[in-house]
Length: 103
Image (cartoon, rainbow, N blue to C red; front, top):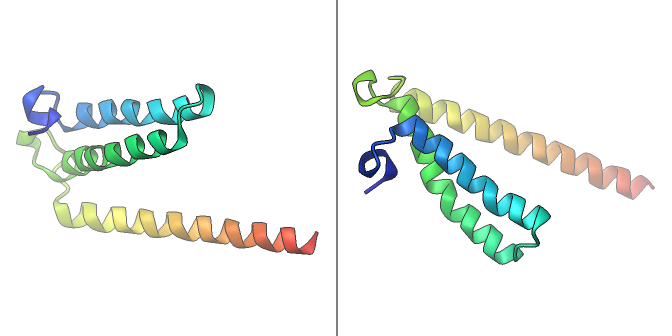
């Protein structure tokens, strides 16, 4: 059972809904002093439907409300984005450690 089918929102609208929902614990932690463990777990739980909604929207057919890119291309594109993101974070962390060591 998902929001896509039970509330008839569709994949994209569900993705937008989960994007808003994932911002709540982040903003709550930053500005309202949410417990960090609570904020982490709520965010962690919401990542699954958030990713699934957007991945399904990109992969499924037009008849089902998607972009019809196919699951293979969507999986490859997301794998590339994740790899690039991890590489960027790794380079920044190494630069940060090096600049700290040189201080």
